[in-house]
Length: 244
Ligand SMILES: [Zn+2]
Image 1: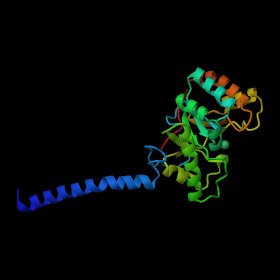
Image 2 (image 1 turned 135 degrees about the vertical axis):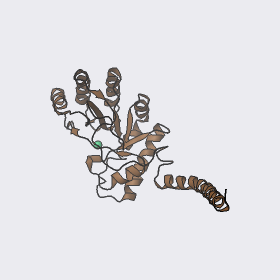
Image 3 (image 1 turned 60 degrees about the vertical axis):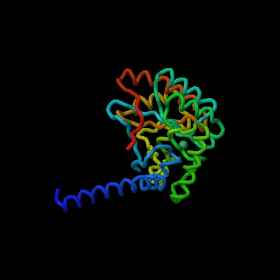
Image 4 (image 1 turned 60 degrees about the horizontal axis):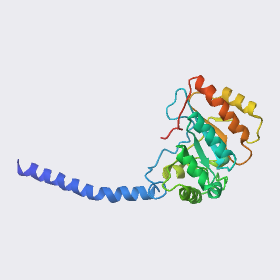
């Protein structure tokens, strides 16, 4: 080995050691800046794209339920999903989480995915990133009071009023979660009508928006109970919304 190459090798080794020493603090500070540590467990920043399709695509569908938990309708819905062996995503309203933490534990224990849907269902379309972050952090905190170390995979803007919230949610490790199909169950139109909308409106890979809280959701729960076997008979399987 010549003196020159020896120096080069030593230099490289030294650089590698220096990089190793730098790597941990750098990673830690990057994680803290992104809010990835402490607020979202082990989550890393995700893409800020508002996704509307399933993880796997093809003949799959993702059911998502907003505005709960609700003391009447969420337990019924959980029973229906359990009976059919279907996992869904629940977009949780922070104030309702505070009122019914045991239902959030039940949702998580059943293996469903959790989604931050703001603290009080505010329209955050015109809010600053800092205002949005405070709200989303508070919402995650109340969810984690109910379910310590809960994995909160998604964020959905109330009213679909996204503003600057996708960037904030992504930096906190939550995928902004939109929808391809909204069954418009806000004003209950009758179970048969909801079944008709679902069976006609669902397309392969769709994320479907429904509600288990914020009003009388009994028709939605009954419609879900009816459409799951029909979708299965058409070859559909149930998937989680995409994470990028
Ligand atoms: Zn909502």
